[in-house]
Length: 220
Ligand SMILES: C[S@@+](CC[C@H](N)C(=O)[O-])C[C@H]1O[C@@H](n2cnc3c(N)ncnc32)[C@H](O)[C@@H]1O
Image (tube, rainbow, N blue to C red; front, side):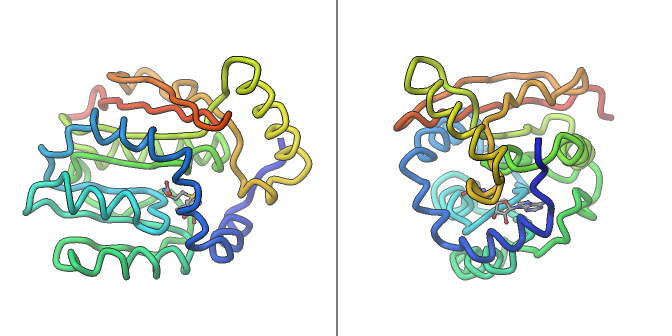
């Protein structure tokens, strides 16, 4: 599989910018499932890896998080960080958006977050990078914290399988054409240090999304 490098991801999403929100036609049902099952009303600190335009963060801060809860979003794209900062301006006292170099390291204290969220990001990362991000999520999450993920995944039925076949083919040809994204199976990346609490999928227009919520095991 050809890898979508960090430099390619940065260049692509700097260019793609607010077009990312046009994907809401297939993303919204999965994000709704994540919000419903992520128990966000019971949080103190949320960290989002690859926050994009800040669309989910806005929803969480406006509708779901307790008034005192804080939010940190990180992203590799300067354009995305600019869009997210502008969007989250009404919550600037408790919402921070940081530009990162693409590495998984967040520089946050261990056990300091109770939700680690990442939506439609793992599907553009290499297996090695996913493992690094999961290790960092495990480190920063409190014992009772939750990992909350959404990703593009393999579809079922004739249409779902056809879309995936074309998608995989285009990705193999040039990851750039699909923003680096390809269908993946999130549980394949979670080892025994996670306990999966919720796993479901939803399809829109032949594009299938997987929603996964897990708790860290064995953290003190
Ligand atoms: C497909 S977009 C999804 C954005 C948002 N999470 C959403 O659901 O709309 C992927 C995002 O991940 C960011 N990204 C890609 N690789 C990253 C990395 N290594 N570290 C942090 N952000 C990354 C991109 O800049 C982009 O904003």
